[in-house]
Amino acid sequence: MASVKLTDVKKVYDNKVTAVHDFNLDIKDKEFVVFVGPSGCGKSTTLRMIAGLEDISGGTVEIDGVVVNDLQPKDRGIAMVFQNYALYPHMTVYDNIAFSLRLQKVPEDQIYEKVTNAANILGITEYLTRKPRALSGGQRQRVAIGRAMVRNSKVFLMDEPLSNLDAKLRNQMRAEIILLRQKLDTTFIYVTHDQTEAMTLGDRIVIMRDGFIEQVGSPTEVFERPRNVFVAEFIGAPKMNLMETKLIKEGDQYFVTPFGAKIEVTGRKAEELRAKGISGQSILLGVRPEHIVLTEGPSIGAIPCKLEVNEMMGSELHLHVYTEDETRLIVRVPTIDLTSEARKRLVYGTQLFITFEGKVMHFFNKENNLNLLYA
Image (cartoon, rainbow, N blue to C red; front, side, top):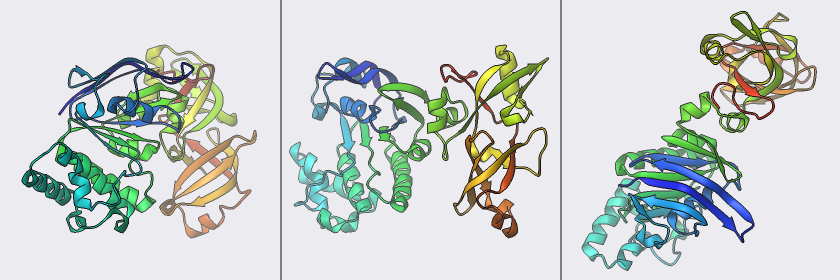
């Protein structure tokens, strides 16, 4: 078991392109940390620097209190699971899992015990005599994880291990990784571009963009208290709706006025605005699709809009609407809340009225995109 500490870590290619900028992070022993962000944000490069597969241009990486910058990957006490499985096609599943142990000249009886134990945990015992070509994608990924498990490493590194699987298998393997984490009780660092994986797997999430850390926090923290517009839009599906509007202060109360409506800020959000002494100003207002509701007809708190696209998602509808000034918004409506007749009326061009409660709003500075309350 081990902690991992990155201090001012950076990666520069050819003295020109900086892929990772001054990355600082403390990962506790037995913590599951997920690096998430769009393609090219530097998450895999950071993982590879921890593993020793990329040279570090600056800063230090410590594993279990030891600086490992100059250590070979095999000497760092890590095990890595790759996106493409990296299995030897000419070897059986048993031999693939046993390969690193044989390199270490571990006695065969101990190899047998470790391989069969890992196979039992992963549910691949019946495949030990097969070659990788005879396995499905999910089975191959289990073999790759088993190969990492038998090394008794201090830290597990996983680089987009589920991205090659179909949606059903991804869901299944996500659950298996959660169970595996509980059985192994070790430190995990996991890279993905999929925010659903990040939210379901991580104790903490590191959200990256263009080589910088945008926010670090628990899944609940980054969802409920996004530091900036990028995090707010990246975490959550569909992404958060943003509207240019005004935040108005009237005495001790706050209101927003999107598209001619007037909605009071209530609950904790109002208390936090008052505590920070925030005055009225032009803002970017954020509201998640699941927090917007359909309302009956025009009112002081209703926003008029027209339906553009109706996506049937099974348990809910995703209604893509546009306002009078052509701002596009998404509304999530549970299908159980609608009669069959109401669903039939939701067609292109239908006039709708939407609103939201005052406790679900997010307020961003228009100039720098930072959250007025949590930046």
